[in-house]
Image (cartoon, rainbow, N blue to C red):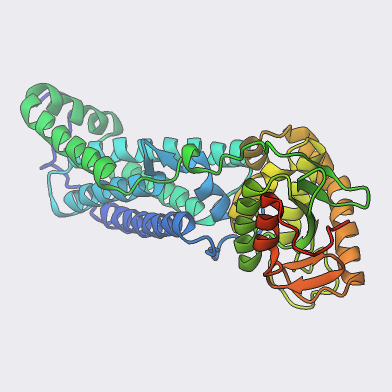
Length: 400
């Protein structure tokens, strides 16, 4: 034995740091499983809101929906499950074996890696996503305590000797170490292949600029469609309303079929207490915000792109930072932020006031030719447009 070298047989280290480390690794494993379930729900259930989506700063949904939540096509949470499973095995190994120098070395390297990863992910969350996830913070705490346990476990054996032992094993038993790494690498590859692919940037809505005439009506409201229409249809709509979304899809189809006969005018009527005083109970909590973003997009001539986007994504807006929405819509982020403070809310308020004067009772509500239609557009609309396109006189007056 060389001078200064401590043998595992001479003074067996305490076992309790290993058992405590195992508890923290298992805690990290449970939190990672919860994060993985949250990630899956957010990408497959538009109505899902997690318990930790508290506001726009403390919000697990925003973090999980960001592009930084995926690594190599797999959610970071899934990599966490893999990492904590390996760390738990190492902690159990160290707790059960008397000769633990190699286990301490492996545990130290894992703990250092986990802690550095926590620092990097925390910085990304704070400075790039501008939101924090309390479940993620729990994993960061578990990593720090795991590192502390490993440092305690290495005190009797020596920190330098513990860190050197895995390197010594790599030199002396290269084949065995390479087999171990190959097994771990195969498990990681299997995870990337077998895991359902997370949503990436390509799966986000890609709003297309409208080719039809569009602009703002003299009396307010964004229009799209015919310059000299046979029918002008004014809709009061809510981006979180499923019936509005259905009508939106159908009306866009009609606009594509009858671009010189139909004009659609969109007015906002969010069923949301934050901007609509006639709503007395919580309903669509993103609706006002979605309408405001659409109005601000209109200031940058992107209203109809935003309109399509909001009908598809309004329920997810609580999990999207503003700059990410701006990127999706091709907006200037600074101009969007400025508009969200004043101009956007003011424009939405004008539509809501007009809707309350008209005593709107639900969405969607349509007006055409002096009549009101609630829940769906006029049943005669497709045939009227068809006749107009064919040059058949339907006997009805054109809308003003």
